[in-house]
Length: 427
Image (cartoon, rainbow, N blue to C red; front, side):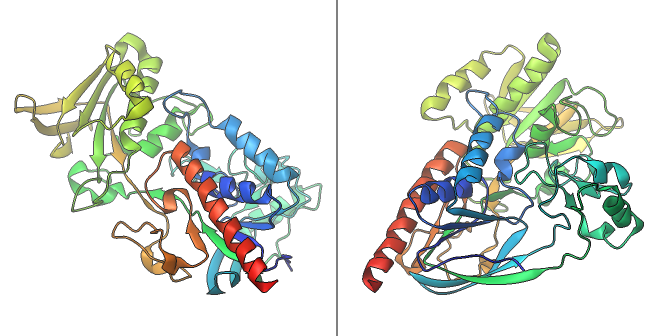
């Protein structure tokens, strides 16, 4: 049975992405006791699925490694993965959290040797790679996963593959008898840092994401570009594996649209500009890159990066919100629309179309386990009615990584003040 030692001065952080990790570490390093709850089997969130950051085009692995090391070294931080908050009762300074723990079927004896993965045969769509590849029924989510421990898919536990995984383990790390459990513990404040999810591109019917194999999303393209991703870093067409040299990026795919997402997701323009460099770096003079945009929102320090990408000869910008994407007889995606600078109609054929899809909150407004103020876009409002519950990062708004981390630090400060104030009143 899992136990959590906690008091009314404990801070609960919900979500282990960059915002949740930042808030949890900042609070723990001031001496507060922190419980970090993450639904996935590992920490890092969507940042761990990025190939590079904009605008410096550096890799997220460095920052992730630093945060992981801070988490391992801090005795004030308790991390629960494969965990989900089901209920929060009480008031600021005196909450009780109910957390469901799903079985990992792998205990702390695991050395991440990989013998269990080699022993099993069943494969599943790989969630980490947005379904672009496959993973085994025994798997390490990704190479830098923290905790560095394998996971057994529940679908193989009662099969021959489950027994094969157990028999292959030399460290007695496979426990097929693990079961779901629920734990309750007190806390004085809650930091809600559940982040964002990519908007469902299949809802944008004119762009044919669910009908044309060579129309993909920006998050899928990001995994494709990563050398450790499903294609080994090769930019290829899903339909036939051929090189995708002529690539179109469609901006605001589902964003700033009353039919889909009302808000601007803020990261999409910069993400596509970054991904333009992936294509130009891969194919050089043979690259042919089109960016269809309403307007490019590259403010402050991002303007220089925008100008840099505009200077790449192989990149052209078309001011247009395309009307539709259709397939020709060879399965090539054809983008239809009107260039509003000159009002010229176009029918442009590409090897691959990448939809810059927007960000929406990971938790639906009706699924919060605590009463909280939500705005029309589904993000958490900073409101006194929320008591000791504070949003961090993309749970509060669409933010880039840097701004999400800054926001999380602010949320940690507010939570520290809440539990310190409550303790003072009790004293």
